[in-house]
Amino acid sequence: MIVYDVATNTSEMLPATAPVGVWSPGLIGHAGCIYSIGGSNSIGGSLRHIQEYNIETGTWQILSSNKLPLMTRSAMFSHEGEVYAMGGGAYSISTKYGTLLKLL
Image (cartoon, rainbow, N blue to C red; front, side, top):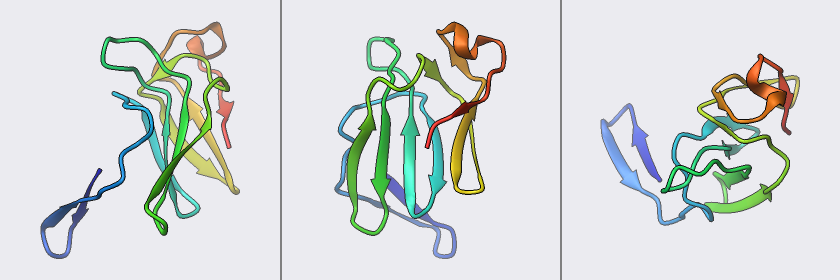
């Protein structure tokens, strides 16, 4: 992961690598962590993973590998301490028609 510092116009490569490589996930910063949700793998297969990067410790962990419908590029937002996803490329009837998913 690369961290960009707007004030100094510099970037730094962090040593931590996500446990599961993913393209086009939903991403959100929430409660001191960055969450990578859904996405696809290198051969185009959709993923159901929720991965958490703890900014303070610099570590990744998989929170769930089966909780999600198959989804990519979802809009992510948090409200009152909870994280939600909506839209994106969904491969499950539960999200195709605009259903809001509570994730965390």
